[in-house]
Image 1 (tube, rainbow, N blue to C red):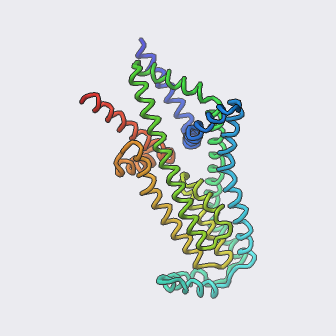
Image 2: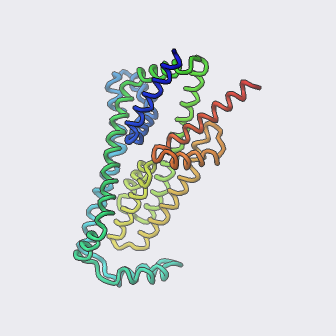
Image 3: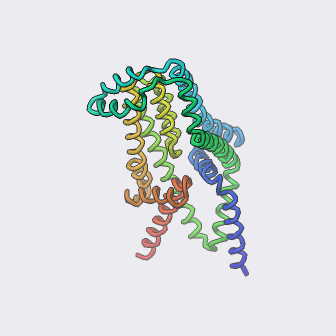
Length: 335
């Protein structure tokens, strides 16, 4: 009879997970943010802060970290975009500057000549917007979803931060009830916790790599307020296409100042950095704590995204690293 109860509970849990699946990405992100910051929250509590105030400070930190760079980027980019619309550069000046790019300048200018032959005007922009209305609506929808998901992630992080002792106890009881084995429960939770920390290490390491190197590229290119852009790239590096949006906005700001060579350099080199982080740095750091081979860590990230979508960026490596940890422990017990 006990087995039937477990199956019934499992079905109910799966149904609940299915209902919440549209919000899986921000929920998982909020849990990971909270888990990453709980050790520091505990330090605040030991120094005399009440658990509620410590949790509030914890949530405020993540809010500032996520919202402030985005706001500063928008504030920096908006005037530049307005300026380029009011005072568009002439086609001749654009082609002359593009031709001056080393090695590929002549090729880029020859291919761009037909596209920008006519001067930029409000009528031309209106026609372009009308022809691409569906795509623009889709991008606006994605931006709205991104902002909504950030809000949900912060709410989840706040809830987990305030109730983490009770949630930890409940999770342990559920696993123990499901397995019926105290030793296995302890082992599973320890291995899963280590896997989560390894994935967070990969994400944070990749963000730091992106922020430092992209910041260096933007500093050399003399992008206005480049530290703000670098922080925004780092913060949004874990969001698919998040860092690309920031880089493209920085590219547009440089175009507004008619710094064409610097703008193209920022666009290309910054994407080289972010791709290197995605395919080299994050997998290596993700597998470092658990001694997982690089290729397995990389495939767990790519396969997770392919199977689960955006949530797979975290869930995929956690599942694979947990499986690998359980396998190693079983091998140890057998030897």
